Length: 139
Image (cartoon, rainbow, N blue to C red; front, side, top):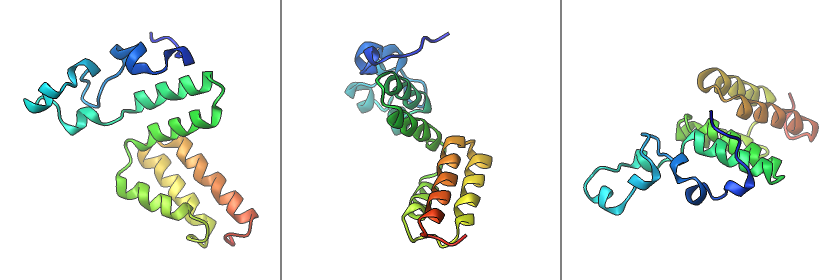
């Protein structure tokens, strides 16, 4: 069982490099220039993982940075979401882009259903409520 991380563990690459892995499971120490030149390291090995983002969230929360921790948690959910869908959703969140709160709620339901992105879905649902209250969209 992994222990809870604290601000003393920041930065993980220095304090616990054995806990830092790429998407294909390669440890940080395997990500060398030589390995890249030999073709043993691919872009997948360099991509951030949900586990790394959740670890950063733990550290941020311990440091009293709850909002930052929530951002890391939503980011962990986004790792599995296609880039095009992320950009469409970002565009939808820009004030005045969506005229109906139902569109944001539908996107939230799809992200929750198709990608298990619960925190992101909650964020979109909250945005829909606030946009309506501020008169940025009718219904």
